[in-house]
Length: 342
Image 1 (cartoon, one colour):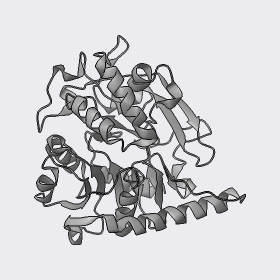
Image 2: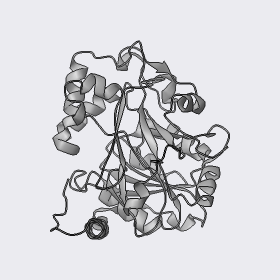
Image 3: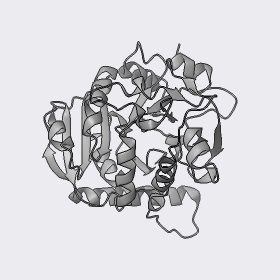
């Protein structure tokens, strides 16, 4: 990923320059996006927005849209990175979707974050914005009975501008391709298991965010090099302002204060999980495609590890795996927190 090289300045000055540079970069990169259908004029003042970058995710889209519509998303803003599986045409027909297309390199756009930062700058100002992938499903305290608007209203009332959610890898029992995923199906009917523990947490001193690793990907694909395993910490839900910018995927933002979503004095602040439905039958083909494209971080190191594991018929389930029940189970395990939200 391109990084700005700065001389010896105070941290506050360095971060301000980095933020301004990333914003300017996103505004320049807007030229890579071609509007397919722009319905953003329909966005209302209090709408909650979702921002998504995708490539070839047609089979996932019906359930994804249905899930987030029920949760309380009012408008979706998608960037389609050169899909050839009809994703674009399907999305363009959805009345609550605005869609942009690009053939530009995902890697050169900071893994899509230049495009998302531009759309957030242009359309997200003063809205609660959820930035997610098509295989990520937000769960938060009371999410089975309270819509997303109830959560954002409470966060706004207590002055919290951002909401964290740990990425929780979900997987099936048995081989990944034993149960073919069907369009429109709830992915967690298949991938209903997760690791209840086996997570490490460190603090990033530069940006102030927590860095979380572990789970099934660390113990299987990265067992010999756990430090290289994917980060699981995310801050996907933010009351957006044009001064804000994502720095590294949704792992961290600037200004730095948006990353302080935890209590260092022994208390608890509210948090959720993103149930990660990556490991379905579609994953085998998807990982091969992404390995060939080499458009991901560290020359697709993560996808090389996946490819190697899949060649040996690797299974993610283990005797310590737990079957997913609901958000209360995640709270009991310490993976999400209500904070003071009764």
